[in-house]
Length: 139
Image (cartoon, rainbow, N blue to C red; front, side):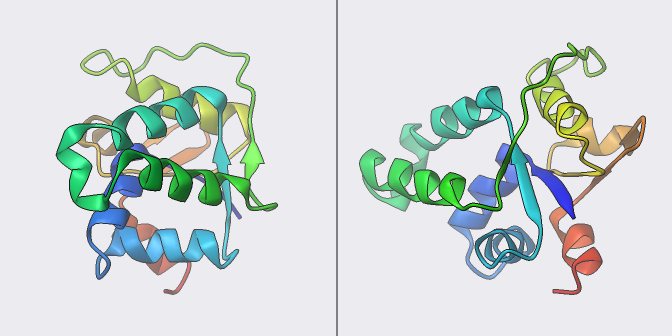
């Protein structure tokens, strides 16, 4: 099963080890699903993780090394979206997540972002919270 993990879920999972986002990250690590990322989404992950407000996670180098490990698993699928999607006007960066999902033929987007969650779905892509996705994976 493929899923795009939004930046909000990735960061929340790193910050709170006993949360649904953390369960989703554990499922990523233990190959319970195939995470789909795009170069643009990987850049967003890195940009957000280097923000000073996440210093609690350790030095920037440590945060980027953790991200690199997550992205290096052989079950991570790299999507190269060809279609530009403009569905979320309130936060255009959210469209990157949808482009990744569409480009990676991914049925799931896991997000904590209110704009994406409000959509609920886009074409054949279902947008769910980390808690909902954990239930899909039976975590």
